[in-house]
Image (cartoon, rainbow, N blue to C red; front, side, top):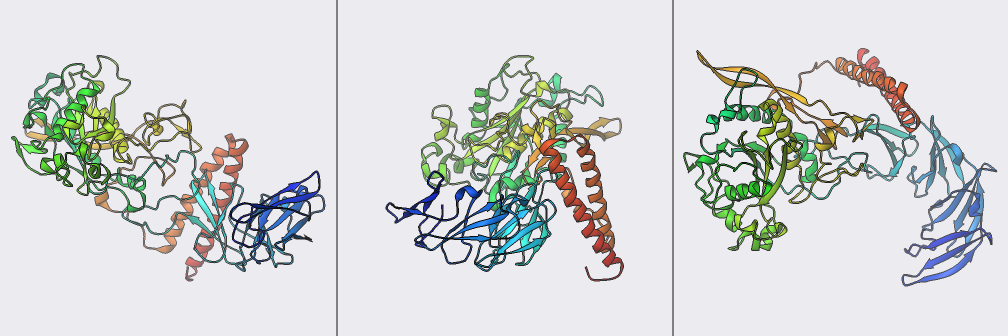
Length: 596
């Protein structure tokens, strides 16, 4: 398909091998004018379409391997002007077409395995050239990446999770590795663009969170949580489930940059700012419909009722101290919750409320029931926690369909405390569920991967990192991944008062589209970036050392690789060797005192 007659409308044409001619359908906007054109044979080789002479009419050309030449049909608008052009061979590699010289005429170029062979069109023939550049064996994506008049080429390398970009200068490639440059936007991280790669989670929308997201631990056990026998400390290892200890562990997680890169799922506006509120227990609530302590064998419906009641009525007071609200959460508590702050209608009747995001931010409740209460019976801990959302108006559930009551949902996680021996173990599940809650695009939608048949129930960005991965692909049969670990201190009483006892919690890995891998960042934002030498030569030396480490790892992987994976790794090794060579040349200039 292409505009053969320069009328701005695409035409359709086929090579009819039985008659050795071209059947052409010229579009007039309401139908086709059928014609028969003669010219060079379409059976000569793969058919390519582009404007080779810059006259605004699409031309058709083929690589004829038997004669090692190009058969070219230049369109005149009413037929083909058949010609034979010579140049670099089309058998060098996959044929790519684009105006790399910026003169308005399409050029043809191939990756030969060691260099790009380029046929620059003059309009009457090809001028062959060889352009060194980033390797193209992983597949080339053609287009102008920097809005100049030249077509560029980008290649994604799964083994190194990087893009090699060949920016055309008109006479060669300017080779770069992307992403690069300073962070951008409120997200602080660039969002990967281009064709999807394995394990990129499906994009079903942008985050519904538009402002601060507030997270609170709510202990669903009345006002005697610490006194429940199952929660009392046993020893320095099994230190019980005291509220103060759970809060200390949660604060330790929130003091890291663990949630920062989740902003990549928020689109161009970035993601939410996450704030941890002071915890509370249900014994302080004034809400008359609130079930202060769950019944044994409580169900998902009971959890929905609890969360709806906790935040659903204007009597709600979270967080609270001795029954008195200590902070008002606009849009999540008080009159603003019931009326949405938009109209006088309750949320489930207010269509505007259901469509307009809450500009004051959202709330996530970490529901922590007592350890001596059981969910769906005793002994089944195949599901230790989950997350979901309920309407912010208690009247919406269960009397109205959930889809009609999501004007301002309350997101929540549920920890099945009965299934954990220690708080350290529970934090692995809490971090898992929080990550997935924070990255839900909007109520009822989930980011998830479907490469192995997963759904929103088992393919979200923490689910797929529970299993080991190999070569950037999820292995559903792989062994369980060892969680990350974070040190924290549990306050413990002793003869002198209180002391901090060191512990180490489990933290879930989660899938990052930016890193194209499973990550668990646990650096302290307050410490800032690591201090590095200001000596530019040392900076280069550090970069060379990192590249060499990566090269050694790839060379080790190459020993066990075969087929496509072996080809990919070999290409990545070549890229890294080029990068090392470039850095070493810069290091020589640096040590000689030359400008870098």
